[in-house]
View 1 (cartoon, rainbow, N blue to C red):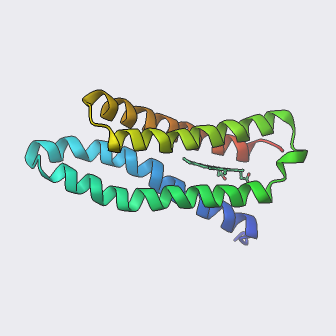
View 2 (view 1 turned 90 degrees about the vertical axis):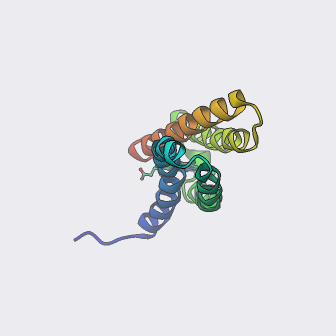
Amino acid sequence: MLSPSATTVRVFFHVLFATVWVGGQLTLAGIVPAVRRSSPSATKVIAQAFSRVAWPAFGLTLVTGMWNLMAVDITTANDAYQGTVLFHLAVAIASGVFAVVHSLGKSKAAIAIGGALGALTAILALFLGVLLRSGTA
Ligand code: HEM
């Protein structure tokens, strides 16, 4: 069996928290319509409970992302890698901003657009992260 290294531990935690943030949103999107049909008042309780798990996971994704940035010396990386890191960072932050719009939005449009763009940017951040690992700095 392969032995884990410090890099394995660092990337493991980054991906673990990212999976809660991204996978949690996708899972919730699948569950909420059924909950709304059977027990409409329960959706608010579920959303609040999800927030208590998702936001700490998002915060820890940012912290472990900074840990990644310190470990991967991007100042010496090639232009393509640097550009992908910046894009990865920008869509990760956008996913948090859209999630805030979704949870604080008062209109149906703000809630729907915030939720949809929040999930899309989170999935894009996930894709760009995997792209980073499969590329060369
Ligand atoms: C929604 C938020 C985020 C998601 C879903 C996400 C996801 C990922 C994934 C899946 C990987 C690749 C792991 C692998 O395939 O081995 C990765 C790598 C990386 N992420 Fe993120 N990430 C997020 C936020 C951030 C932030 C905020 C930063 C910077 C502050 C960051 C910096 C990095 C770096 C530098 C790598 C490459 C690490 C390496 O090659 O050793 N990420 N990310």
